[in-house]
Image (cartoon, chains in turn red, brown):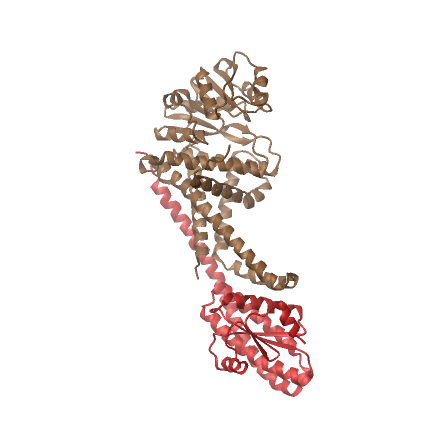
Length: 209
Length: 406
């Protein structure tokens, strides 16, 4: 019978486990810092919502003098931050869900403003509303999202995109779904006209004015 | 949220960390415990050089043995030409003498050639030397002391890479330094189980147990396991060394490692009864670890290759939707991938892993009195992939029941 170094295995196991615990702890400490960032984003969004409300009040009088497209850019930045959080915390995380809800309300508010802007100021901005789903046919929604991201980046002065989760049960959102008779995801509303199912880049580009 | 992906990465990191720390502690604990006796006598050593198409190296190899600091009458060289197609036999013949004997035989593979040479030898200790391997002049006198211990059946010099030129050879030089340390740790655990190029073995043992196995790709590993299975020891020396010519291209290296890995699998299976507590750390830890690592590493590589291909094709599909006008998308994607990284526990685990691996290299490097080499970075990033690939290929060969070609 030869020697088995049980003591050694045990102590090395202990050290390795300790290193694992330390790694998890460090990441915890750092992500608690991110949770400060998260509450910051939450604050940003609610502040922004408030300010946007005010701005739209003012804008309804002086709408053509306000940089509405600039506002959209700020909103997109917030959206990207939420997307990052979604990647690290997961889609089912409560904070993420709440943030997304706030964000879609903000989007609706801004969408109304942009519509007003377009009607009153003779602007040729193309308004696209995009309904996606993470549950049904998510890969088509992802593809559509990719194409729309592309269009937004290619024509930053001409195109604004508002994305909504079709499965979200929000009264305001339900109203919009009803107005445009949206039934499935992906669906795209380009300048008030509904297109159901995936739309190619070429088709969408041809619809832009 | 923990995904399947995370779990296998945790397992991989846990095992690699565990192994690195384990071998380091074993080595550090035993560092000063030199178990080498001062040689009271100088037994006769027969250096067997099996050679097949080694016309380029054979003379150098023989000469390096003749330069050794060891009594001339206690050293003989036996060259066994395995029916080479080149001038190996003719070359060797040119320096034939009383202490250098040259034979040629029908082609039968390395193990058969070694067995043939052993039959012709007169020494007490046999050194099996590949024709592309050259012993240091201190090699013999520094190693022979181990044989004062009757439990020790074989002693191994440290292996260095002969004049590394290509980056592939330089990476192997680093690998061999680290391996030297690991082998020393194996020895301290009484678990060294291979007798590679340049190994010194008691002839009595070889004769008693039927010589080197001719039906395996790695007869040196088979011999090592055979010695272990009879409960004898194999010593690893660090102050006695041989230099070997390493494969200079990735393809050759890969072929060599596929052969080694295949041979290991073959022989662990042959000696599967050794996977038991009766064989101590070797049976309970090292052999199972070798098996597990071949299986797990192969799985890991396969899994990530498939995932990479799927991810890539998905990305290509998405970009085909925008006619590959991707330049505009870069800024957006870059931002997304970076931020998750710093809050991720895996990042820290990888950092710890890198620190442990680096410590191992540092100790190995200082031990071998080598300078720090910048190639270490290349070694660290790329070398593992080639090794994993060789394990995967060897496993596939093994499962399919085919032998890799020599």
